[in-house]
Amino acid sequence: MAKLSNLALRKNRIRAKVGGTAERPRLSVCISNRNITAQLIDDVTGTTLAYASSIKSSGTLTDMAAKVGSELAEAAKKAKIKAVVFDRGGRRYAGRLKALAEAAREKGLEF
Image (cartoon, rainbow, N blue to C red):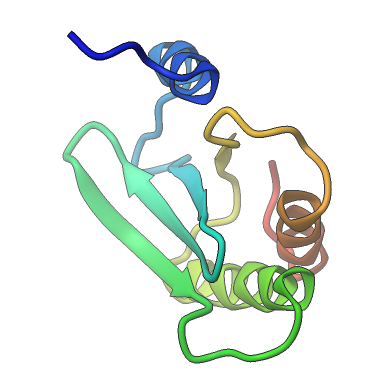
């Protein structure tokens, strides 16, 4: 059995407590070395309600994170979602993650 990394342990611990519904979906963020993706997930039905990615964007990762946050907030408005539960994925609330969250809040998403 493979040993889990500290990030994976934190992620599992957070996911045991954080869940999303159709009224208040979970905002899941994935940050890799090159791209940033974020999605709104209804954990009751297991469906993705809105999605945004930085795959076709350019610039610094922090700038791309802010773009993804604002795009996701716009997609959430179209889906008539106002409030979400924020799932950091075990990461610290700093840098790219903070830029994404603040951009989403500026566009009207509540969490």
